[in-house]
Image (cartoon, rainbow, N blue to C red):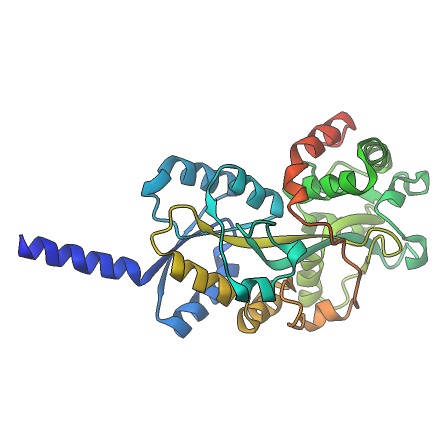
Length: 326
């Protein structure tokens, strides 16, 4: 009996020193952050990666027996769904509230954005004068007929963009814009932003909408890549931004350690890793972005709370389907 009790005590101690992270982010992108946290704190991190849908389903099925301490995923829409499914717990942290602006976190502090993803207009430097560009809505103008490339509406990034447009413009006007986009398509929609950017470079189309880090990666590999970036809606609502973010799992066995990890992710040290390794914008405004990102200059973001992307996501998906955007 004493041996069994001693074994259980050791197991509990090991669990207390280990953080279990469920993540929909690419392991290669997340590993530098986990390694640095372990180096700083001595805490070992167990990582399980899967798609957002699979992780939310797993957390729901595991319930109180779940080993997960932290959920990390991309897009505020996915984080919003986790809150609706009661999979995250609210977190009181002065550090996180100081480091992460209010519009980049859950209103009730169930999750916090850790990096910012700006989704804006990209264009052919050889074929499009930057002065022709203005807003997401303008891409529905007939002047772009046969010149527009878009990523599939099935990707959450576009669902969140349209959801935020609905919040800003209303449903009827947003639907008219999306129908205009569909009418202006130069070719079928693309499965990812990288393929879209390469299509613009090849002359298959002239303008599109993409997350900035995809372009940054292509420019990092080839500084002469002939696609430019234009900050959309600077005179109106601002550029659509979204987040990759994290929250403490509802049934975490180590909530204090999970809080410490999230606070680390918001720190200058970790935010610099997000920027330099992942080529995303730091969520912490005190941290400078990577040089490629800084070369695009500053921009006005849309500061409506990103949780709206989740609240309106289902309606946005239905709107895109009605508009013929597949």
